[in-house]
Length: 475
Ligand code: SAM
Ligand code: SF4
Ligand code: F3S
Image 1 (tube, rainbow, N blue to C red):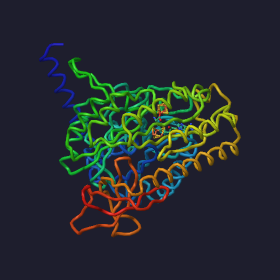
Image 2 (image 1 turned 90 degrees about the vertical axis):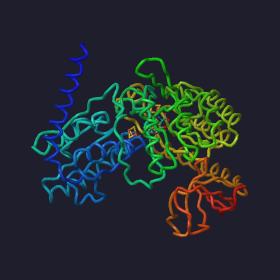
Image 3 (image 1 turned 45 degrees about the vertical axis):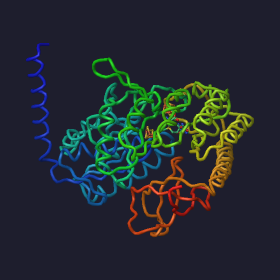
Image 4 (image 1 turned 180 degrees about the vertical axis):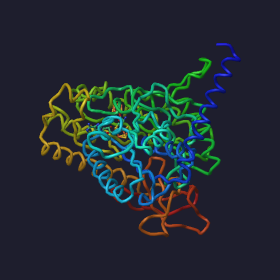
């Protein structure tokens, strides 16, 4: 295409965009939206993109759904229970709609993607159904739904990253923020619905990520968490094809934005986290020393059925490597109890792996079969609910012991803490986190202190989930 032609095409597109926006905004002007998010941090981060798109279209956010013209619920499909919770909530919202007929209810996120028009047509629960890659079409779909049509868009994209959209921070403490770096997932863990609800993995441009981080620093934010289902497979090639940015490179660039900014990331897949990432973490004090490394099971046969692509031994070797390069690194995990055909001995392997790794914290679940996944198609969900729950309880108890042990081990040590908020229990206490991501509570030591300050705290006591300490001078 000739340059002039290309420019004209771009102008036409821009004009059409403007015309489209102009036709939508009077309808939305002054209206209020309420958004509620479920599921993982990616969903909460997406809600901030949605808020940005709506505010651009002259909607304003309200924390009170009773006065909202549009209620949005950003949903999760990861386990059956997550979907049940959302259905209950939708039924409550539906009742409100009966008293406020003009109001619209929209379902966003993974459940929208999984169930598609079913929520609109069969269950008649909502007015709008919008999948995770279709948020740009929200204003147009609201317009259609206001006119009585069905507002559905669940198309998944191979390149949508919302990289150009500056998220509107919702419920923000002004100190910590999420920054999405990848969308989707190319792994095919057999139990997992995410590849179906979020589509293929794509990496957001490194420039737009660093720009967003710079802007957060200018606004006074002190900690960012780089987000993706598998951050270690981040891979971005610039427009001219002469620069490739890996996750280790991106982490370094993020750390260099400001030495006063803490950088965290989640989630790491054990097969993809590299020595480069570990050495980059070691090199920069402001990259937090904590890795969330979900294992799912401690048994190689079960891991194979789960299609996790690593064995027990491989995982343990990775943990050894982390301990070698980052001796003070926090380590957390995810576990699934009672996956298809798991025997009692194989369950014991998960408990013994937890002992070896000494996780500081874990998210623990029992297996919930998800329609359409590889496991649902190939394996029988043959562990009774009773056994699943008992095994899960054993895992939870084991993690309780390990968390307590890890916290007791911190007594007498001094940590640099970023103050985040006042403690819920006592307004004279602050809460913040150590680099290892442990929540720490301590009394204020002077009136000038405020959230966003770094302080040194000596730990003198702990509970299973919290460290308790006192502010001390810089050691
Ligand atoms: N991408 C991350 C990973 O690979 O570890 C996290 C994915 S998922 C959002 C978070 C956790 O939910 C998983 O690590 C897994 O433990 C759990 N999970 C996923 N599917 C599940 C299922 N069908 N039943 C129970 N737990 C599940
Ligand atoms: Fe799901 Fe596996 Fe992807 Fe994590 S890595 S989102 S568990 S498919
Ligand atoms: Fe749930 Fe979707 Fe996240 S299924 S865990 S909200 S990617």
